[in-house]
Length: 405
Image (cartoon, rainbow, N blue to C red; front, side):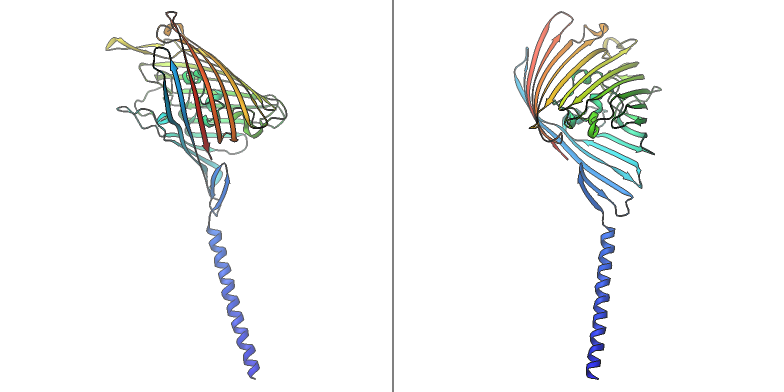
């Protein structure tokens, strides 16, 4: 009988322990199921346990030192944080509903704040709806489908800055609606059609309102299929394309009643102008070799804008055209050499006020982790030709480090 009691006691203890153990496992499983999932790739990703929300966090910074020599000026150097960006993207409720937020904090990004200006911290704040692989609908502030180099991130450039033509003629970011139809195949003829209707005044604009909008359209043709790893969105052939890849594109924008000298950028005009911008781009990549060429143009019926209260005060739309040519080769040790030539010709109406330009650039880049972590060295030579016939030459040498996730 005594042994029977012992067996019964052990049985009850075992059952109780087993129940407690099982409850602990179940409680732990419930806790684990309520935790988010983390991923590491392009940034730090967090996905909720129910998969209804995803957040990806990325940052990047560019630190540079530049030695500058300009005619009629003392030689000098500049040391600065050129760009410091923080980006958030992901989806809410369904992977078809995507959000993108990008903030900038470096002085060169924010710009000098004057009376009445907004702080230019917000670069992108856009909602994307992707019902299928072909359609992409966008509402908010982000880049317009303009020239190739502007559409590329500044973190995906081979040289430390974009070209002089991009600086003058680009259409940049704006607030509005965009619709893309994407039809890309890996090794077959592909094309994309991109359209936008936007305010025309650029990012974070609240100074004025008008009855004009900007209308933008772009077509991209990829005769040999899409580039590896979305290679049209970064410069250089880091993917070392095994087959030749080509992209040809054309874009046009009409900015009705624009109130700034460069459309989405620049200072205030004394009177609204309707601006027309035209872009052509060509891109080729094959086995580490890359070539890029671009044509940019802006015009208006009248470029000069006069102060109605004082005719001696004026400013102007920057009209004219320019060409860029850029070539590079990536060696097996991830060193790359880059050469670029740009020329820029201003419209006859404004030649007395601003010079024609030529720019020669040569750079060497060491990719440590593709474009996310790289070292860049560059020498740049400018030639300015003025209406009077005077020519001035300037040059600079620059070192830049870029790092990000």
